[in-house]
Image (cartoon, rainbow over all chains, first blue to last red):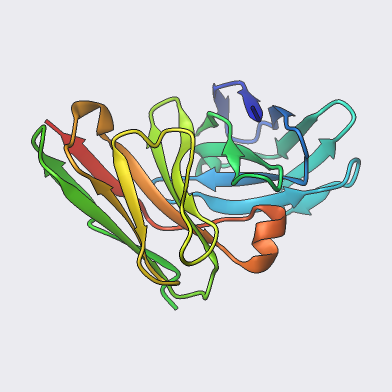
Length: 110
Length: 115
């Protein structure tokens, strides 16, 4: 059974801090790992990673995948209150739809 | 371009009542999905439809039925609602390239409360 574990489950930081969110996985036929951001409503797509060691970057957010150690991290630098959200990690094996972790709830306080 | 549209957005039911959540996408996607989200549980797959005419069970299918009415529409039915089905329900779809990478496009969610 495919499995995705995120840590920490929740995190409170001050504006300007840098945070690292973790995602480890076990899948039988890995194809991709995806990060989503969920504020009040639907999850919105952030990154998709398929290859090890290649950093994906978008502004203050970046993510990298380690296929040997079966994990990914999502970094957010210079956090802002608008970064407060649940961050979801999901893996795709090609056999079944996305399997999601439980998410990390990030709260950024001014 | 509306993307994925779900109705209703909110619903309150009594135990034993039935209802159908509707979902439609206008992106010509082949695959559609229903997830539920409970506090601290992430997103759990209820049912999915890889293509028009096919449906498959996900992780938590008990108490639900689905219908892939056509390529655009995928409905989720609760025949006899139970308090354990109180949740936020998300419909999603994926395009052919997404089917190879897994990327999903989500609706805004439907909040269901069963009393």
